[in-house]
Length: 264
Image (spheres, rainbow, N blue to C red):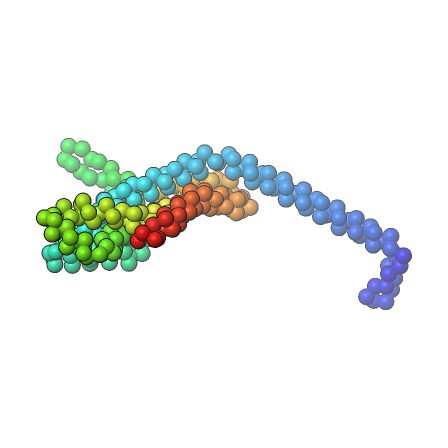
């Protein structure tokens, strides 16, 4: 078999077959090299797996603490927003709006540089680690969002319930704790869970200020390996870990929203 080249000459078919075999061999060699590289990346990932998972557990711990602090303070702030005293109501509204609309990273840096590194109690010096500052910095926007969630849930109930409770000789505190807030729980739970998922994903911001969470440990592992081809596998593993943790929370939030949609 002969074929015409672009220059008008002829190339024997045997040469084309040889060229095809060479190309096929090069493709097989490249595929084998890719498999070997993949196995090498996998072995490197397995070697650093305990360190990365330890950092991820630290992310979860920070999210738990920040959510607990933010929920406790934010719930009180939200109740202050429905206070009958105008100064309390206005002051809590200003605090809520300020921290709710402030960038999370700015608040994180604010806490890192504003709070001291240690407290001198006179008889002892108590250190104030960076992860505690990061937890407080992340708790501030959570506090503001929880405050708005509580205020919105209380305001969403018909005002007639307050009037009915007053006609039954309930004072305002009894009405709030025994009638209003129990009904607000199911309204607050879906957005509260969604806020926690957002907070968990935001904990990676702590790596910027030097907290040894998962992103920080991933950067250290990549620096120790000094292999650019490990960037995608390692950061893909970080992405998978956060997705596997946060996506079930998003699904549960969606189910709760559908469950209470008719009753709301």
